[in-house]
Image (cartoon, rainbow, N blue to C red; front, side, top):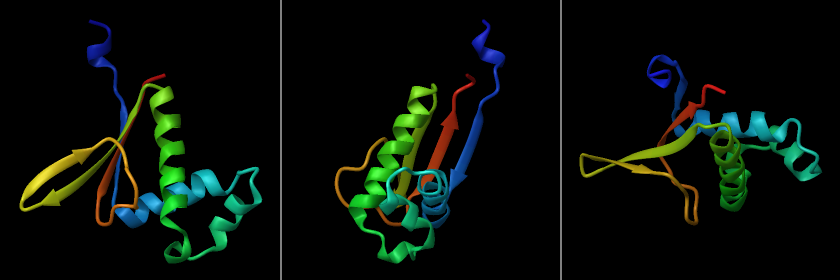
Length: 102
């Protein structure tokens, strides 16, 4: 099969690194002036809603190109995976971005 030998790029990031990625990727070139201000703001001052919006934009971009974005957390020594965020920004998750081969 053709797809079995294709290599994909996978990046794993901790919470702080993933937030930095979101700011760099979606704050730097945003047309919205509020998003441009994210780059100079402290991560602690950015609202949960804004983080979730940035996450949703990243997830949409990655999945449209055939990849995936999954969050992982350890609860009672059990690794749980999440393919979405429901409300508040989750703390201490690890993030795995798998980029499609397109």
